[in-house]
Amino acid sequence: MINAFALLSVTALLQTPSEARSPPTFSMDVEAVQVDVSVSRSGRPVAGLSAADFVVLDSGVPQQVQLAAAGDVPVNAILLLDTSASLLGERMTYLRAAASAFVAGLRTGDRVALVTFSHRVRVLSGLTLELAAVRERLGRAYADGMTALSDALYAGFGIAEGAAGRTVLVLFSDGLDNISWLSESAILDLARSSPATVYVVAASLPGGNGGDRAHLGRDPREAFLKALVGATGGALLKARGDAELAQAFEQALSEMRARYVLQYTPEGVAPSGWHPIEVRLKSRKAELTTRPGYFKAAGPR
Image (cartoon, rainbow, N blue to C red; front, side):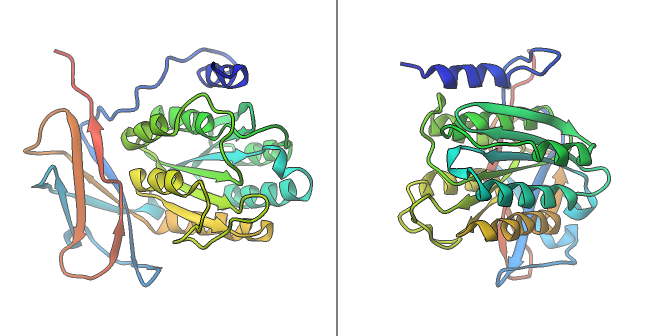
């Protein structure tokens, strides 16, 4: 049986206050491909690279790339914030402050969207340049109900699909999905074909089940969250306590700024379907994180 709350949530995701939208298709249908890449060594970002330092293979075929430092490219930041009942009281105060500081750290030309979720998914703001207005709406967020995490991700990927430019989705959650209509596997399919890079700020589950960034211990969310960030080339950040939320959001923002944006027009590859991507450095040793590929929709016949 489909949960009534969840069905209402998913229906609401396809609407704005003024108009209804068609369900997103989540596929790239553009000439140029943009690849967001994190380059680090011993946990620290590697700066000063040029396009000549990178090798990009699309479906095994080398591509001619252009490069821009991510800090120079305006960003669409989509905040998805868990506001279920476990965030009641002081915990919500910490979350509001951390998310507000993240928004304040964005720059002129960046846009931000705000989605909160419990058993309902609330799109409090679509992508906007009005950062102060979004911070004001954050102050009105409240905690109640259960956790429709997958349905909230659907909303976030829907916003990302219609956005032009570089898009980062920042998800915060402290709980298990216990009411979504959509499955984790369906969300992972969307993540693989979405243009958004996903950062997850995972707070410890109520009652414990902590862990560090690389090893979430016995956290039952581990497999899904790792698969989510792996599909998009993002990162999983762990906040073991409420006081660490601000640090985790700040880390997401700084890592986002330190990334490189590679762009190329695919040559010598199939015009549609799944395109695996491999990115590496020509002569330097470093750890690279990027999405494993993209889906190119077939054009009209």
